[in-house]
Image (cartoon, rainbow, N blue to C red; front, side):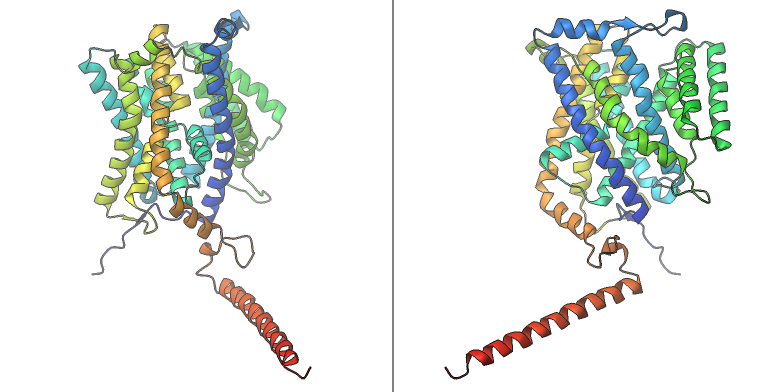
Amino acid sequence: MAAPTSRKFLGRPSLPERTFVIDALRTETVGGVLLLVAAIAALILANTPLSGVYGDIRDFSFGPQALHLHLSVASWATDGLLTIFFFVAGIELKRELVAGELRDPRTAALPVIAAVCGMAVPALVYLTVSASGGGSLKGWAVPTATDIAFALAVLAVIGTALPAALRAFLLTLAVVDDLGAILIIAIFFTQHINLVALGLSLAALALFWLLHHKGVRTAWIYLPLAVVTWALMHASGVHATISGVAMGLMLRCTVRDGEERSPAERIEHRMRPVSAGVAVPLFALFAAGVPLSGDAVADVFTRPETLGVALGLVVGKAVGVFGGSWCAARFTRAELNEDLAWADVFAVATLAGIGFTVSLLIGELAFSGDPTLAGEIKAAVLIGSLTAALFAGVLLKLRNTKYQRLCQEEERDEDMDGIPDVYELDSPEYHLRMAAIHEAKAAEHRRLAEVAAANDSGDDGPA
């Protein structure tokens, strides 16, 4: 009996998947840079004489009280703008399940195991550190998230390009992390439920699905319906961002006759820049503004809750993602891509310790009754994410020469047909095109040789 064929871990993604990953991460990279700028601006505003004005703007409330929507600017950013972020996350998750890396259980097993371990180990690190120091256990979910936009911004700043396999792996980690965050928010941070509002919200979601299923494409119908769904979900006591996820998951990701792209792809193409370039940076502007005095920074390393968050992001994420990857590959007998090494997996695992956006959100929810501790948790998220970014930057920079070579090989298109050559090595037509190209080059070199020979014979003639 023949031995079973081993599977590749971090193998090259398919051409459609590679195209999607590149397009998605390009937008997220720009958004990540804006996110960095917004976070830096928030820290400057919160730690300068402008802190009073910044606090007044952040705490200014507006909106209809009768609809339970008289919220502060910071709450509008958290409950409103982040709904756009989770809407795009819902679309990503649906696409991954239908047409991406998660559609095949055998292919999805390794990155999913890595992502789950990358959430479980940071939670265990937090619980261990906080319990041993007599701290609150409420913040166990804070270090479980990965912020892909912030991670890509780090890559852009240090000038490192990841090969397609590592980029796809990082995106899959982030998608599974987002799913985990969605479940955590829905299950653990829903306390008081208004069943009437929840029922009406679910009815609005059903209408959204029905209209979409019937092929209605008028945006002016969906936009008011989405706002109503969001408002009802907010009034129900379930976190309002769940409505965004639900609507994203309802979009169709398959292409029908007469369509160039699926509805989910079209809408994601429009909404991703809004999410990455507007919603998330504005959330960061009002969420990341925490005082960072010497005492506040010292408290991060002495208070059990904040130390648990920082260590969870820096140590827990790296150990969890790398350990999950290695164990999954070991026990499934999957072979690591021969172009990569386990050092590359560890570098990406360290990069996954950047947990900015969702970690800040969960920190606010976990310690909503203790504003002082909530602020210190935010400081811990900032310090932990920055530390993880520095470690990952060093590790990735050490491998940058190899990454550049792999990226050049993946981008090479010598036959100029718009498809990278590495995806055509099994195509007879590709080799025939390359043969014609080389024959044309050989003929040109023969002609130049004849010209050079004629010139030489002319130079050797009588004066």
